[in-house]
Length: 433
Image (tube, rainbow, N blue to C red; front, side):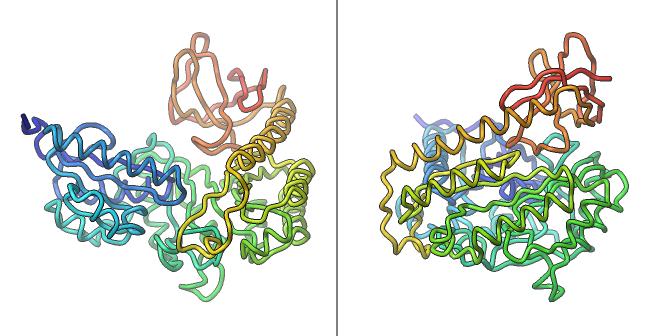
């Protein structure tokens, strides 16, 4: 028998997918809180809002499974209402409404005012920068633009997020000031494409100007750049990185592949020669820069020869941080017209081979850190360790620094000088000095 939930009028926001979704959930929660609604993140409530991801197969599957799980909770009376928003809902709304009609309503990525309305809240335009952080309070994501104008053949993001739309420098500074007031020390700049920032608003790329403005915000101590596109990268950013100590010498630049036939089919607008020259410029102009990239293997038509080029290039470029994904054949993308002709087991073998090479590179890089002292931001205490990060590492995706909590006391959210005493493939171990 169905019993009504005892958790009355508590809105539980469940976030799936990337950091951009985390940001969107925080904005939604900030709006709900300003409307005097009781809101929690991934806890328990009788009203559930699922912020979905629709990027690749695994993410879509996780989103659908989460919806089905909450529908089951609705049927047994654990929750009263279920709403779905985000990328999956934007991309597949008619299909979802037909296949899972038990959801109370579906909303797209730009339907925040409508979602708030069904939750009994008004969209408040004046809440620039007001968010309910779901990250530890000392770091936060700052979304500087929405959408993407790039024509990459494999990517469904423009279908879900629309055209590139930059947020003004003034608004972003205001958001950063608000976050700093709340105790945030590190900002992770995110967008579908940082490189394009400003072109739509100011008719020129203004990422460097934005960085200077954010670096002037009191209380912010680290600024980190995620998701830059290689084609058209604004090279004045390198000077700001070199001269402004708050900008971490860290750049996340997803390159996807390097063999020219694959880059051409992917519609990346670059070549192996141009990409290699760009990375060499980064290293020359910002000594000690940490480069993170992500690669796709098993793209349609990827031959053994293409893969060998990629493997050899990964060995040559020695990225400090690297992730590798298997190609996902996404409907309504340009590449969906091509035959998905690389078998799944070959995709997985190729991904494993890249990560094996990267594991050795990462181990060697980490060994070079032993004996050096780094300024670390302490993220949390976990078991018998305090866990921190150097400027070289972003939360959740990169290495961590482990410090023995039985012998040392450190405070979450503080910076500490840590001398590295040991290193593994993906972690550093150190002591405070």
